[in-house]
Image (tube, rainbow, N blue to C red; front, side, top):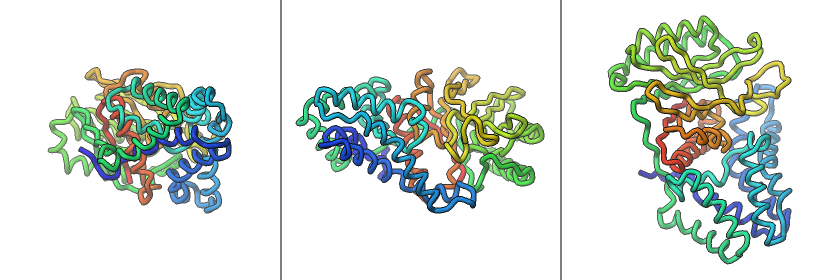
Length: 377
């Protein structure tokens, strides 16, 4: 099955166009134009997400810094030498998309589209794209032929993105609560929202009977202190069967409540498993190691949710969908499927939600695994 809003495989051309550029400035502009274009809706999204003290100028500055930051490695490593271009490209891609700190920012790696070309190839698919780029670097005719081929794929209907199948035994519940978090705490609104979620579960309880895992969006439980934890555990225990597990997003207070972990929680009877978001949104959520507030960075910590039935879920939380590093770290552990959960209230009227979900689908295609997506808008 395909859908017309598929992420175009034409993104795969960007590194080749970078190599074909006649000088360093032109090469840099090619990559910068791509990133600024695809992330243009960061501006209206940032105006919603950031505090009211921020202006349009601040949102534009954030957009520009993200685009320039990801493009700088391509400026540094560009070379006019045919013999050096391949090595320079590998170094630029690795630094921009796969290594901190640059890999913590930006929207979409062009190589993500390799999932559409090399469906199910996994690591071999990524390696194949690198190999193609290396060949393009040493032979201009091959590079031009690659560009023509990529342009023709959508024309002949060969670039449509397949909607990934869902993992067995899972039921995703999407919500429409608007603004949730991040870093804020209001017990009254958290309590009211919890009651509304429980009422929704009661209404669809019959649909849940054949499912083992019930999944709710990121931050749906709000700031989960002891009272909130007791509320969710008690309510869900009364609603679900003893063998059913609930997976939902919450903020776990740390450092005496000054900071928090943006996390996914799985309740399995009396057992609770917490998987913290590895890369919160820079600046607005993660504010640096010495900031007094904000979300914690868990860059190299475990992002795999081990299920009681033996399967492993690669947990990708909201903003992480745009990046490559969380997927790479997760697939090193051979997960059985991707579990993405997010908040899209801040960008629901932009192209960013579609880009997020495209990225999840493309990585699922590349590694040939199912994917479950659940979001709040």
